[in-house]
Amino acid sequence: MGKEVISTTNAPGAIGPYSQGIRYGNLLFVSGQTPLNPQTGKIVEGDVQSQTRQCLENVKAILEAAGTSLDNVLKTTVFIKDMNSFGKINEIYAQYFTKNQPARSCVEAARLPMDVLVEIEVIAYIE
Image (cartoon, rainbow, N blue to C red; front, side):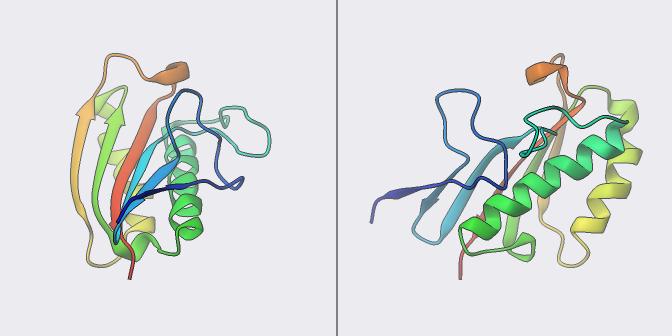
């Protein structure tokens, strides 16, 4: 069993020496997704909720490219610029994880890539 790179044009390409996702056996590790629009390559305009939605859409696209879905996410890590945005992020997050919510960590970071407001990474399983 070896690792397999997962890549899709429906999510932003990596901006460094890493992969969008790595499958190992039935586990999928999705790199932190920022709120980049994959069609324009630009950060979505708007508030932290708009950015959270785009991050999760990017995560969803990578999951689908690997043959799995948000329903199979085991763990998420949410990095946010300002912990005061926690409630607003949760409002959008709850729209994507509606049942059997995954385990989660949320960390305030001093600075995120491209000065975005939020970044989300996940670990999922593939049936």
